[in-house]
Length: 400
Image (cartoon, rainbow, N blue to C red; front, top):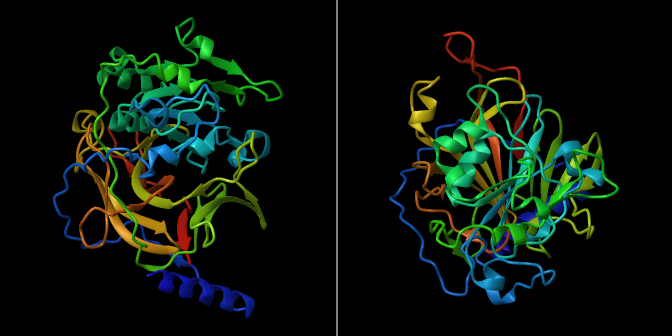
């Protein structure tokens, strides 16, 4: 299997050197993938192994004495942090603490193509993470999936996308897991700070490890362990995947020596590596998952990213199928695999399926999950008109 991957990489290199560009393959996010999905339960929790990365916990070393997390104190309590992606997360807008995140999520923020990043920490939870920004509705539902402690700095409060109302509806406000940086004098305010040398609102950081310690110990997050494998993935060539959001382009390029994908941002013809602001280290991923997701827009900066199908919510303004599911494409070991994803309800995990209909096993290490729009609609809040399909947004995912 590694021989096949090496052959694909060599072939791509030979074509490039010879002047023949490797053709990009465009993914159709709404194609009918006729996979017969098998019933999937929960994956077993394996002693001494991370449920989010599959890594051996004893091999993970904290960056300072202030760290917490499963590999430090044995407590499984994921923490989800909203992270700035202004200027595409480059230079003075780069994040810090990113290389300790088990999972990095990217999701729509503005209709013209801006995105928001979310870090999920579990194995190692740092004492210094930022820049922390505001939450949208899809992030509330993502928190519910993990029952994570949630750090955010501000929130959407438009009709139909009011984050505070949704927290209340889901009873998250009563659980001691929400940590707003704009909430006034609360127990956790001492763990938020403004970083010198950065301009507001891009300067807010937090000691996430200490905030985790404020979560009641009787809260037991669900077992949403991923399925991992030590086998090399099988598929067609996937040494590079490019995401065109309309306003900016990001790409992930595979390195065989690292057996991982490095994230780049493309400005015109210039590529820049996505790095940690403090360490200057590039950010790499063992798995890159493109999760094609339906997105509704109430206004241009108010997305409803449907990563869950919740009938009580969607029946307010929509009709039809409330099951959250869609196509998914996986990039690992330098290959591409077609798949599918499904999330049954607000408290269930997102299951990623392979082409055989079984759960897709991930490679051990960090995962990037991009919630990329499959379809987009404009929701009319002031009228009774049906939602209208948005057709003029030029977004695409290609790979080679």
